[in-house]
Image (cartoon, rainbow, N blue to C red; front, side, top):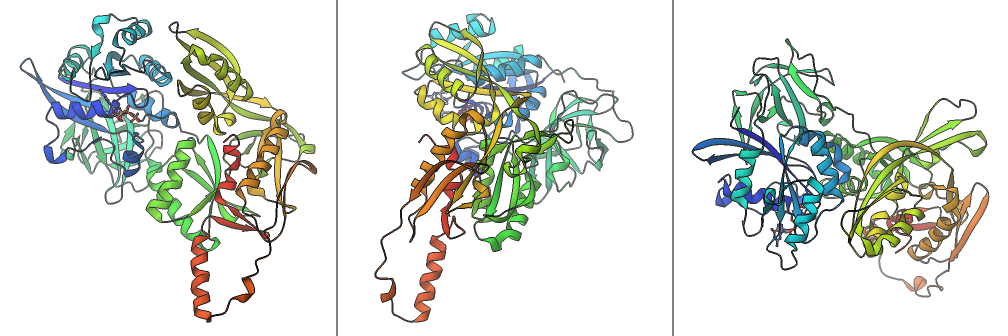
Length: 598
Ligand SMILES: Nc1nc2c(ncn2[C@@H]2O[C@H](COP(=O)(O)OP(=O)(O)OP(=O)(O)O)[C@@H](O)[C@H]2O)c(=O)[nH]1
């Protein structure tokens, strides 16, 4: 145990975490030339294309230092706020963290939020100043920033370049010298933390764990504490680039477990694995059931594909336990599902996976957060509103609460004014303003989560010219004045376009939605009025003008089979268009409310 080191890399997005991980694998000879690929740890196609780490994994390296052999377990952490719970569990599985800071961009919002997570878990922090090879690097200034943040010495910071390989040896030495060896009880009953799981269609769910006390043996009868289920440990082993089955994984070490579980929902990140007969009395602290934050309807473009969509969603759920869905129906879109996601990125990923892996074309409706509503009849009973149409009628509604977050934004002092105006427009209240240096400011706001869902990231980028980083954490529900704004096309309410909005913004957003829809809905043979309404009251109106009469329409001759072919072709071309009443609505229109300011 004394020669094991468990560590993770924490960094703001794009500061070089994956590149550094690759370099460490290279240097310790953990990858053969043939296996060398860029960003080895990001194995999903989607991850590689987006260049972000979505799912965390772990990898083991051997390294000899001053004549002694060490085992280094690198636990990878996802880099996006949507997955912050997974980050916290990965961090909890380590004793140390490399804090990677880009020498050109300095400390950003996620650097700080991840650092706090690491400090909460008492991790030893090794500051790494990455990308010193860049011409735009500013190592002196950024080092000062790091010293201010951590209260460390300048000499503790390791200048590095994950690109050229500079500093890699020093980083490995620091991991061995500074990160404490694990300190568990070898003889105690098994107690292991699940920090991740991956679905493998052939072998079932692979569970990644860190043994805290005792050991886990092949064929041992084990129990998952939170779910209360028992399994047989069919296979345990260590993770290199491939899996290496072992007889036993001992105290302090990291490994994988295969039990034949076929449903990802049975393996909960943060849960404790223990022995079925001789269980530990103490589960690992910090377990939480992750709750979806953002909800949206997902509908098949072709109503006939509903069953197929259901099958695809069920399969997706087998390997992504954080996806939840229930059937719903919409007057406009027919049968589909109300789905819960961890955040907007998660939503995009699911939509993309449905299309790529399952060949489904789907329509996604305006995302919303989960509200709490209370009726006059039962003012103490919480009604969960995950869909605007579930909001009780105004006359019976006692009050509504919405989820709030603490938003942390780091920006340059030049843009403080812009960022503040944006946050105030988004119903934010400033709670703190700290100058990190003369140039860089950290701002904290209490804000409704719903406002982040609507175009916040893009606006923030624009108003700060890209010099702002952003992170958030939930701080609970607060009462709010919300109304349901409906959209009528050709005098028919399109329920899939309804949104819950704050009273103060409802008129403005209703108007902008009508304008945006006017741009997005193609002209047809007749005028299409677009209206926004609160209850029976119309608050905005636009019209899509009719096309001029198509004189060639009746001239069409030719035989019927050609006509059919043409119709088929048209049908394909119509993908993502939905006929609602007699109006054709393209997919973009359903998301229009997210792009009001484009
Ligand atoms: N010049 C230079 N570029 C680097 C260095 N390290 C990483 N990069 C580049 O910076 C970009 C981001 O690096 P990644 O390793 O993908 O960053 P990351 O932190 O893993 O990003 P996420 O996975 O999205 O959080 C890539 O284009 C890298 O090639 C470095 O030391 N020098």
